[in-house]
Length: 396
Length: 240
Ligand SMILES: Nc1ncnc2c1ncn2[C@@H]1O[C@H](COP(=O)(O)OP(=O)(O)O)[C@@H](O)[C@H]1O
Ligand SMILES: [Mg+2]
Image (tube, rainbow over all chains, first blue to last red; front, side):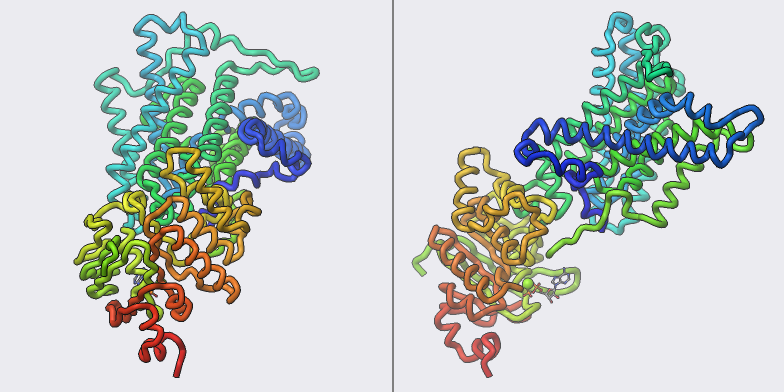
């Protein structure tokens, strides 16, 4: 099954390019855990952007003037860098959440639909932490290099522990039950978590539309100006913060999973639980650890997402969660590289759709999600194993 | 017997749902012995090993290891106590490299120097594996996978090795090689419980044997005596 494709790290899209790199270099720590994963991200971004740019111009060729006076090709050229940057930003958020689905699927072969609520808990925790910092009067003097890690680590830790707790009390007793049972539990848990969070904030903050106190932060409002030839692009500081944080976390995750003893045990557990146990590995501990990793990535990205959009609610997890799930399926569920690729691709697709659909009078950006989810349906029909989740021959 | 008993099964009953697979198995394995468990397909040989290593819980009866009742202990705790089970079908992690498979065998080893020493011992025993350290487990041949499975189990430095049909599906030359290695490992001081359908070879390397039939032990004797036994020869050694 596609699950067996879990973690085939060195077979990404980048592999044809790495053939020229000498073996000695490929065995170094620097290459394996820094150059390769970051290079892979860059290749994915460039590749996905290039393909979508071509598609966008193709649309412009087919429909040169969607509205009188609007030349689509010109609009695309003008907005291109901006579309790509906002696509990458949201794409990294999707990637990190998609990794949570894929990690858990890898070890339990089960879609943890409550993961979108783990993300939501991260988003509201980020708000709570930031508000407390503000209430303590420390927000103004805090530099972004202090604030963002505080939010990310705080939300990630709490969400990770929550994910572990959920697995322990709600999923573990159901192990061995028919597949549908834990799935339904997960969906039920989603509703419980939404309402618990809603009740908590209604009681403590008297509201559940939670707006991050971003208004008075000077450094956040001033955009960074980048110049590409003739075009000037204003990049939001939050975009940069999200991308940098995401890259750091993804590099760390890759190191943990592929470079440490614990990661190796997780991979072994995902391939054959019984055998892992026979070698003395505590399988339940590895499953908990996997939930912690996935949950903390999801929670951290929730906080970053909150910083990006400003206002979050107990229901904020649903759509991004579904999109991240789409991303995980797009890349091949169970495949970590696939989750990264799927998330980035989906983010960029979405951003391009947003950029282009506005010019179509009959459509508009409210149709973006329909296109996105059509992708999910098409993949499930035509390539259920995803882009990278190909079958692997297994000799037993 | 004067030999110290390492493993003792007493009246084991194990079920798969309603299937009564082991119907009161009792046997002992002494320190330093090779004991073989032979029997036709479906007799319950693998089930016996799974019950010892804790993968299956018996409904009745006890498994004692070095005098201690290990019933109900978790699989990884039993492994950590020194029982290493090489299951049927080798169960190599197909997407991990040979090196990673071996390193996982050393999961409980805290001391790096010790782990390294065991790794070197494994490569001495199986030089083929050394040539393939960076190859994915799933790409090895059947014989190489069997070697890797045994080498991986030895990384835990077990007292008792439970081997489930190590010769299955291997070419005759490789079967010989595997049985030679089993003898060699035994000489290193390991106690071995060997499950085989290839009764002839098993009785050649083993000291003692038990014959299992539909979940019950029907014969037990020294390997020599079993190999000479008429009913055994008829049923398992392919003689008319
Ligand atoms: N996973 C299982 N589920 C149900 N029945 C099983 C299972 N494994 C084995 N059995 C049954 O238990 C009996 C003993 O099987 P097993 O221990 O595998 O035999 P052997 O290893 O001697 O060939 C057989 O009747 C077999 O059909
Ligand atoms: Mg068997």
